[in-house]
Length: 357
Image (cartoon, rainbow, N blue to C red):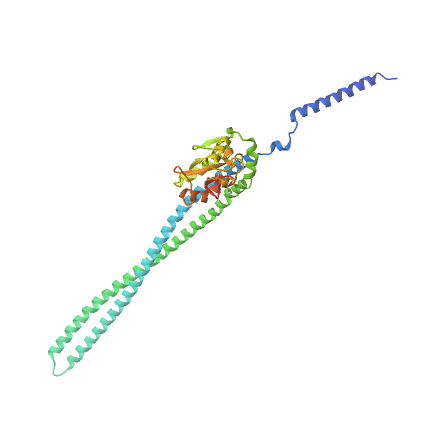
């Protein structure tokens, strides 16, 4: 037998259960169902493009420090010039001091000699004055000698005073030059230390080589990822050269850098599979589909294998001519292209791609 309260308890229990179910449904609706982990993973080509972008785009801190360092290097150059001037002035002052010391010593010696000559002349006058019979001519001559000797003493004394004054001036100039040289040396050393410190900081902030190396390490995976799904819409034009969008930024930066160095680069990038077939025929490949590229008059990859067909290779030209191993443009590329993610196919100086193939 049931009591009147039991139906009411059942109703309340069902209501609570319904509320819990509704709450859980609302939570699941808001949160959504998590997708597979692979959906959040970046594509390899995008990773390559991102690495190269960050490799070629300095951080604000790097840019600011580079500007600061440029100013500090200019200051260092000024300090170096001041130091050079200070050394020259110090050398001149030291030479002047040496000359003044020599001149002072010579003047003192001449003054002493003049005084001795005057003393000797006076002694001579005493002797001839005491001679009997008196020799008037000798006395007069002795007196004239004394007069001349006295004049010489006066002259030599004046010269000695002038030499002493010149020596004091030279000594003061030497002290001033030494003080100025010390100041210039300290200023230069301080500026040089500041430049060295910030150069080390700048190197520490520069991760471009590391990022470019990471991009190079996945370049073959980029090819593997892009080739099966490539469509022409994946390409774009950079200064008249059609390349894959993922390499466009790096390629543009490379051409800009070359131009800044006086090297004008262009070339041929993307081409269709049909064009690759035509080139195989034009270049005399024994068989369009099977003959190795090296068997053609001009090395030409088998259709479906060329990186040109997916916009990841460029045949570089300069001045309308394909690069040769002894050209200035090739030397520039050999020295710099790696920074932009491009590698040369050794057998073809003009052929550059993200893998070197």
